[in-house]
Image (cartoon, rainbow over all chains, first blue to last red; front, side):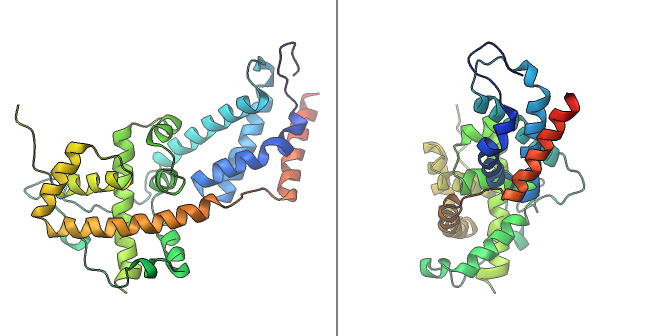
Length: 189
Length: 90
């Protein structure tokens, strides 16, 4: 595992040095402790298996993080291709003479209790978390990265290997679904 | 060249979403403004979207301040896993 170049690998130190960093990196994206732990574990496994290929040109951390990022993309592609899982509900007609118009049952209705002070409410935050969790995984992941973690669009697109138009379709669908969810569970109750 | 000036509600609400992140272009915002003159539903959506943004920003602040760490026990499991890998090679 060691080599004559500048940087060397020391797998027996990986957990102490990098586990928390990788775990927190994963959890803010996938919001699931078990999935995040799996990604960390898979990264260390993969790093160990390919240790002989390490050329020492980057630091150990950079190298492990690049393996980790590939695991994140793999995870995203896996949840992206999950068939049979509920898609977001459509809010607009997709074809016909009303194409692009609001579907009546999904259109915005007036809210009560939506002043700024009413919004700063702990139970409301709990309800919001439930609504985000009810999104299909891929939308929840992109939404959390863009809106909660506030990553740049280019960063997210590069990391998940998606186009900007694809990102905005997902953000738009996530936001319209969340708006409706909060309307039904909070603002019109 | 005739520029497409009219927007559907789907397009308008997408531009409204982008503007919540300051990522709508100048022309998109112009078209949205005109759309809103004649669309009460989207006007309501814009208002509610702003409130949702306020809510998301509060959540964002709370989440960014959180520290996520593995427990000692979880780290021991990972240590052992790497050790087992190492032993199986030797």
